[in-house]
Picture 1 (cartoon, rainbow, N blue to C red):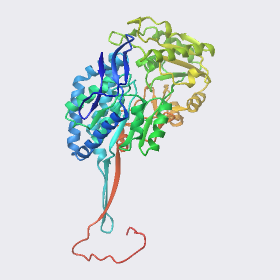
Picture 2: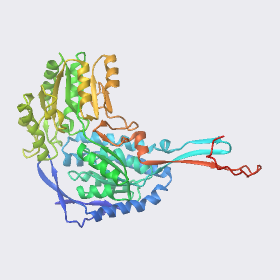
Picture 3: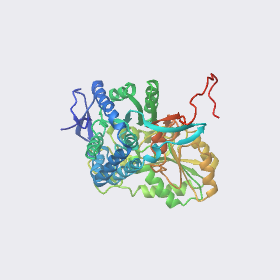
Picture 4: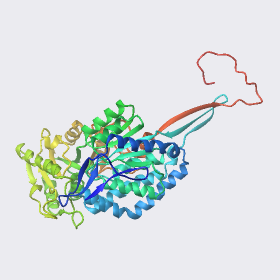
Length: 499
């Protein structure tokens, strides 16, 4: 059986820890690989390699760093189909969805190719008499990236292209559920000319995570995952003197007003709710229907769900399996909870007909109406193909519902009323907002991240905020005395003043 090892100092690193995890093909329900779990000592080796490489890489001319990123962009664009197939084999999402993931990650690589504009400083001549002031931005050092299973390529690419282009070195800890994409990316970076030690991959579990969070040689941590773990990562990392951006969970609402185009809205709700089997932090999981729109909207959504083909992502299917049997069972348990809570299960995904192996981790698209805000079907982040309907009487009631939720990642409104959309944009307490756009993931030159329990730390991913996270500012005040003038300034113990 294939064994996924670590990647340290530009080559595969065979683990000596003797600890392993199973890697499944979710569409077949079988173990296809094993992955080595790093010991504390092996994580320290990777951090040490990154620390050694930082000295030379941070002093490498910016133009050269950009050229490496551009070469990586060209190689990845030419071979992105290979990476998509690796993702499908270990995550289960259909190949077209995996290809979309890689393409969105490529946008951040392209953004990093033009990072020079955001790394340049300012310069003020004669800020005070004979005094000039200028600023610079410099790399922070070794960066730890901890990424989730649902986007094994895109989420790491939210961070490492910017970190590397800015002069940092990286230790990536991918999800142990689907680690092969990270190793493939590491090899491609080497092919693009990245020096050894600048990008390292450590596979493992909490042992590896905790060492990244506590090791004094790691300057910054970027994390994406569930809210409880994000909170732990943020608190542990900051307690150990690191800057941390930790993106957590979500419960994303789509507010539908009675004047919305219902065919357009139903298409958007199904696409956003069931893409990648709902295993997206930006998936729409709650339709907030302002009456009397609920019944006609539900009818159109149900009609579309019944046409979705669930099966092996390498076949002509629309939706693949969930990542593990345990996660499938946990998601499916919410259907029973909905029944006990008096909800109306309009479509039950447990009986779905699949185009694939019967041993795969299947759960079909599920639609639940009349969900109560007190039910765990609403309060929990389910992270699966379950779309809930909550009926409200007014626009204001819908906004209040969204704002009272503990998450604040993404939300959307569907309406043809510009005034209502503008008011929604201003009033809703959420970090990313879509107006007739169901998944409002911003372009790479904007920053990604939510509010409330969806983000710990005050800096979001990619865009200008991402560049600032991976750099530190310096302000330099200088005086060069005119040789034609006297150099004597006299004694003055008062606090310096600008004159």
